[in-house]
Image (cartoon, rainbow, N blue to C red; front, side, top):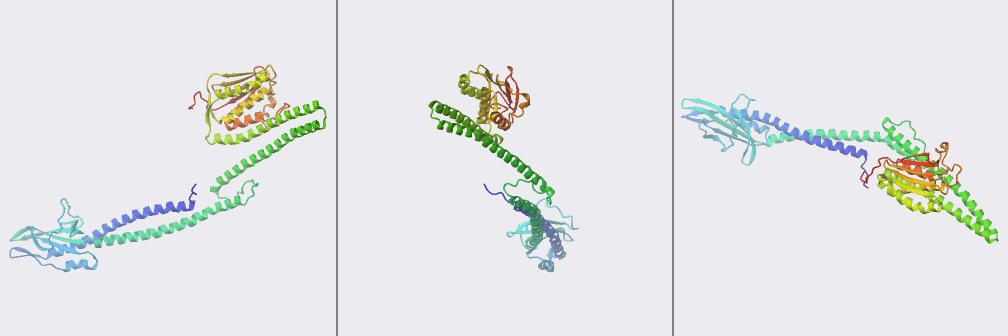
Length: 465
């Protein structure tokens, strides 16, 4: 799997992305604001040139003439990188002087309210270049003519664009310096904030594998306390689990040592005897001892398998299982053993009952319940296996039962309570119930025996539950 990005770089990346977006937005805003400011500044000069040209109009021989004061156009030479064009039209819209075909005002262009003049400002294209144009109307009142002359002055956009770009560049430069400083500040701030985590990591790394003490709380920031508490809770669960495993190994070794020693003694006794009958008896006893050891080993393996099955259930690997069908299969499998012991084995299951669980573990649960009931039921007795619609599973026998004061301990490992056996059957059942979040309880049977009841949550009568 790809390694997750560090918190420091992720934070810097997010902040840099935000700053870039802000810089783009601010740059565009600065450009358009600069363009508006340039239009205001250069429009005033453009209008001044148009007024100066208009002042040079005069009437001669019944015609309008123009004396162009070129000083009006020279004004742009000091601060403009663009080119200036002008055009003067008489009252009959005939060209008097200047360049031909300067773009007229588009229809609907409003008269400017920024200056006390009959002027209109607009954008156009002239000779393949973008231009800014002012159209100024000059009233002509002479004996030989009366009307409005029009003066158009156009300037290419280079100066305005240059000014707007300069403002945008300056804005981006300032924002870039500010963003770079902010990123450096965040880098050092985050590095300082992560030092306690580095110290915590070093403290955990330096510990021995068997050191499961709580982490020290001194000099731990408030924000890190939940993490430290979670680590401590996890190590405490590990410590309890290790203690349980150590105790289980010790108990298993003790439980295996005694029957192995007895089996060895019986075999040695048989080897010293020259009587064929005694040798056969030793072999029979040895076979019984091996059977008991095999049963104990199988139950120990069952306990080991429970942990894996419980993890599968916790991780969502449970399946929909029909308890009635599972009980029928286990009942048929154990019917020969019950018949050989003279015990009647009955199954009561009216309809399918589906629960979520791990099939192997649930089979182990039923097998241990039935095996425990058959082991404590005398010949001629009855063992009943019930599956009820509410998700209840019951196993009832006619045996001696369990005293109420001892029922709380029968789920402990290797607890026998004076009976023969390994002391693991009900312990396995209890572990499987905990893995499936099912409740188990012991009750008196109808005939004085024991009734074991297991209740599953979320049971249903259809498999899609």
